[in-house]
Image (cartoon, rainbow over the protein chains, first blue to last red):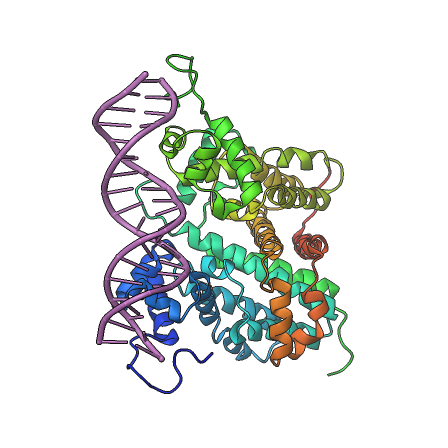
Length: 226
Length: 226
DNA sequence: ACCTGAACACCGTTCAAGT
DNA sequence: ACCTGAACACCGTTCAAGT
């Protein structure tokens, strides 16, 4: 917390956490997570790979910082939706998280592979739990609802980003599924193929989010007054 | 589909897909996904790494086959629950999937990183969609419910397995959260810390599953007779 | 037919040494 | 104080050559 940065003794310092983070996120968007190596990131900053370790102890630390940055402003963007009842505010938070993950290539994979305890991530969690507690949900239900909705959102977005990534010549997601289903004997999958191979992920996300919100509504003991 | 295996010409063949898959899953359980390398797998089978490529075109193919094998019997184990209404059968399928992923170290990570179109995976999906269609849900809702519940289950189990893995000296999941929350100013997280740091993942999973099931119940237009 | 040997083109991370 | 050079201990994958 004082090794680098601080005043400005010695050299100008070509590196720092903020610039490194920014470059890493740009590289992620251009090339994807698999191509984000410490060496390539160093190249992009005209430096040797070893120099990065003065600012991030491990690659995992860098990824955690990237995930934290992705969550920046998510709680706030949903707070603009400060009117509306608890269910609309909760949905706004979940939508904002999905949007934040979609904003970077492989964003969900980065997020799922880390566990940030930074202000943006915890601020999001606090806002989420706050909406439910203030609506009269028990502490236990509010906390478990956070995990449930966040796990759903990350799980969904992981699939969403995986579905549109490959782009190679080989048949990807939907094509593979279609082939396997029509080849095999899966009556229910055959009957529902149009929906199974749909690429309307926004409405698929809304479907699941609505199930969760309606499930929560069933547990809701409306609080006294206000 | 004929290069290896087939009759038994030439040599006895120390390798084959089944034995390789079995060894890979054993190695996964012992050492985790990060330690599962083609070289270590080859070592465990007294062979050089290159030899594995006669049976699996890429490591990704091996991982896909591992994920498929994890799903073996999942549809059937839940079909034993063939009595019960649609909601009990659907819950049984979701629980069976979680159990199957938990049965192998990093099972959820392996599953999330692949897209098997094998008989076990598609059989599970077909059974899931079948339960809902036969209960009178529309094709579209049945297919979307599959994705929603599966994404939730994988998302949850990913977190569940991540939470108990580290074991290193550094504070892991719950400890890190506790520290960050008490250090910062997160009123709602502070109030719900006991639940947030709970390790009762089984009941957390049930909580979310119940929300989804109750959400689906709200869309249910009961079918005529039967 | 099946596997070895050896290579290719990489990885994350460490750390003495330079400036 | 900040970064380079060079190394350490690995990776996934390919493919001629052996048996």
